[in-house]
Length: 118
Image (cartoon, rainbow, N blue to C red; front, side):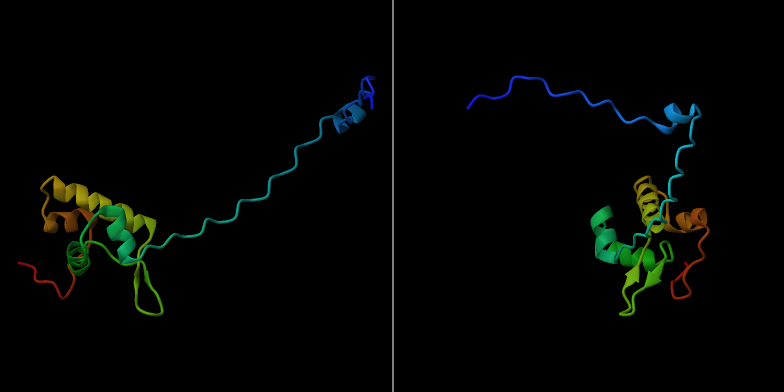
């Protein structure tokens, strides 16, 4: 069987409303983006993201350096992106030799009632 060697007919592109009316039509408005869902981290997620040990993370919690954002019905602590950023800043300060009391002051967080302020 031989294939037909004739070129296929060219179909003109559909005319736009601008060409038809001579006026530009406004672009359709984009639908508003849905609000971003909050990302929550459990303590294990924070440890994985920062490399801290459980002992260090528990210490920062006890001292009021980091604060949980919420709790699950089961009692697990949850942290948001903002608190993860705070924890990363705390780690940077500690590596620079800044003390826990000064970090707490920089963050404007009062000591936990159960902690020993010496």
